[in-house]
Length: 355
Image (cartoon, rainbow, N blue to C red; front, top):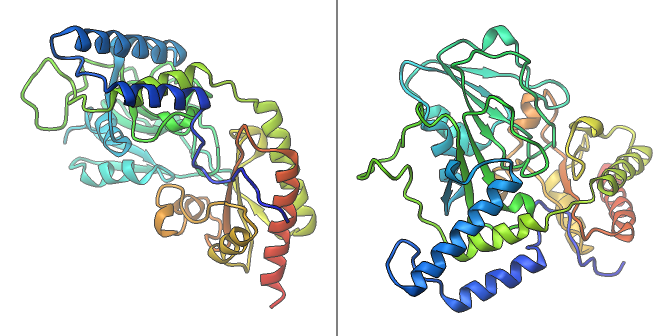
């Protein structure tokens, strides 16, 4: 089998135009837009233009945005800004580790909402009490499952939305209070988080701060912001084609390996994400076997993949965590690569099971 130039890992390739913008910005060495001077003024104009572009494509307003150089910090800011000991915190069993860390630090009452067999949140309307905070994951980054809020929620319910996997593909719910986006969701650069704050009167900076005017530290790389804006401006995913490939992979794998479990329903999930569970197989070994054939996939938990920790999402869904392989389809994925992936994955699993 020849070398596969694309990959099936969650890491996205930086959009070509965004890469050009990033290199140009790094070469120019943009000045600090908060300072005085010609270079700083030009940098401020570029920053404001980027913020306007991003906010427009995310159906937000520039004044709602805060930029951070660390996505993990963004999870904390979006959620913890609403928390106090008096407020009950609702969170999902499939929330990212960055959110879970904030949940563990909450000193007030908290309640975990379970996941159903397809990875969607079970949200009984009666459970969302008034004067509470809800950590709401718009899309699960592991299964692609899309969540929806109940038709009616308490008016004073503060909803902190994790939109890091949804990106520009799924709109925020009408009653959102804050939101966190990851630039990588639209083929932008890593190292940039977009935090949106809607319920400004109820949100307070949870970090030690000097100025009451600035909501966050606002420490980030301007070149990364410019590249992110360019990437989002040119983000036009062919979701129809991606969904067809997704379906083709699901059918091809389950035809040869009928015991395979799939986390998430095709028609209720993002089109580019698939999570398989091969019963009796070892996910890490499958990953390494595919790597020998120049095919890159993911295994373990999506938010702790660096150490291949078992998926807490699958566990919350009542599914096995062994033998898990996660596949991400990209715009540059080809039909040939999809065919080769199916063949290689079936071979790798069958080889293990026949031992």
